[in-house]
Image (cartoon, rainbow, N blue to C red; front, side, top):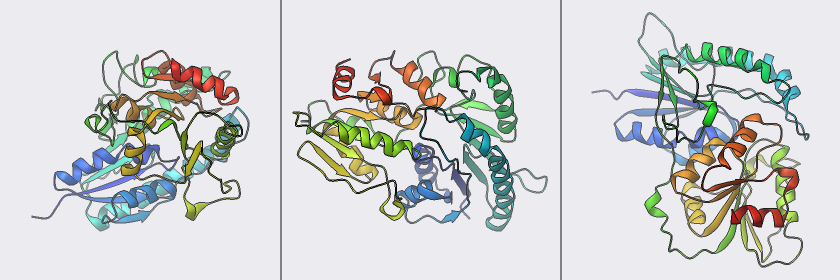
Length: 347
């Protein structure tokens, strides 16, 4: 009997959308499905490294040129035409692929146009998102109901909408996916994580006080990297590891070579296995308040200091919301000092 085929594509905004889907893809493969990957940039590169034997195909996503300031609303508004055009192009490309490869299930992680509708062929389309409400910057909150309706119109094109969170009052996404009526096709599917809690025993000796994990778009990734390395310009008793979150094949002018020191070790990337090892030998993680990072840290009960990306309302909301829960504290990027970091870690 021919294997059923799943075609998966994540949005290429950093690694989060690709990383959180790893346990879903593993489950499909374990159930005997043939999985085909599509995407672009670091997201597809990461998935190819995780699943080197699977087919990979390029489908471009839109790119937003973020600013160095604390507001990203202008870059996002400028990118709206590119978002619409990219969604239409991926919809047309998908229709061709579904017929050519005889696809049975299409899975989109936040790609608006990656769904299939046809009277000729029955294909299940699944949309993964944790943002039923897309947060807007202060001053533009009045637009949230409009954006919510637009997003629900996108969701209605899919057979199912999967929300990676718990359905109850104890949850990680807060108002992003709770405290509002769910779309009829939406279902909570629980926390997604590559890691298993039993692999992180408390008694393991800790080699590092802090594990810094960088991610997200430029130029904010580099700005935070410079602030972190600046914390170690003077001698201290703090020992840390920095995972830069860059690919040597994609080094830009913004991403300079860094020199490690006795206090701060540095690597460019970490595979899932290597990251698992680093997490097990580090006391506290310092990372962006991206939702995938939050899910994975919560799944292994790992303490973390969250630093929201300036101008990204979703991360700013999550940083504030989660700092009221166990495991997490939040520090603003422009307030990051060693004293602030140590104080947050003690919380």
